[in-house]
Image 1 (cartoon, one colour):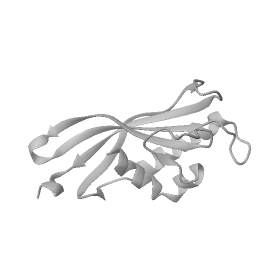
Image 2: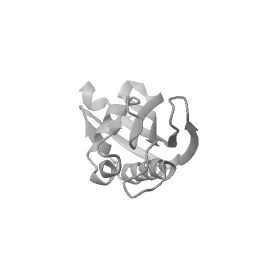
Image 3: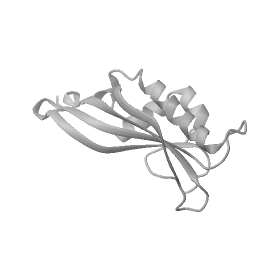
Length: 142
C-alpha cells in the first residue's frame, strides 16, 4: 500500500515540484534535500473474505537543507507534508495493481511537526501526516 500511495504522490505535479521527485518508501542516503517518506505502519481487515482493509499510512516530509527560496528546512518539511495531505484528499477509488484504494483524511493527524532528527549529523526537520486508506482488493480476487 505504501507503494500505491507513493505512485499516486509521484503523479501529482504540485507534490513532486516541492520535493523534486523524491517520494520514497525508505529513508534515502542523502537525506538533506526535501523528500517525502511513505510508510505503512499497520492494517486492519474489515471484511477479509471480501478483500476490504483499512490501512494506516504515514507520510513524512523531511528536509535538512533550506528551500530554493531560502525557506528554513522546518518550513520546507511541513509544506511538503501539507501538500501531500492536500493531494491525498482527492484520492478516491485510485486503481493500483488490480486493487482500488481511497484516502480517508477526515480523522487524519497532521501534518504535525516532529522534533528534528539529529542522529545523522545535520538536523533533519520532519512533519508527519497519518491517515487511513480503505483498500478493496477484491478486484484481485476475481
